[in-house]
Amino acid sequence: QVQLVESGGGLVQAGGSLRLSCVASGRTFDHYAMGWFRQAPGEEREFVASISRIDSVILYSGSVKGRFTISRDNAKNTVYLEMNSLKPEDTAVYYCAAKSVPDLFRVVTALQEYDYWGQGTQVTVSS
Image (tube, rainbow, N blue to C red; front, top):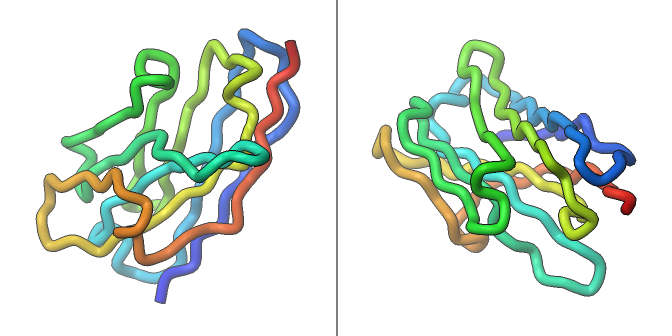
């Protein structure tokens, strides 16, 4: 069992930056591919970014590529999402997720494949 706790959300003006963190419980964090998703009001949850077990493979959605950076620190059981040049359309609840995978280099984009989810952190970008 893995518990995920996100933090770092808040209110920011357009063009600003935020850094989200997600801390995982347990001793096998490096067995998991990690992902960030987001859900805006009235919308479905959508993929944002994923990082492989040893952070050598990273994938972003087209809407955030070039503005967001996912990273992980396996020694701290933490995955980060650095968000720059924020836009009002980035407003959403952001969730981190974990998927147990044997492949060191696998990233996971499909929401339904993930095993564990955090409770989410609200990001609001004002215009």
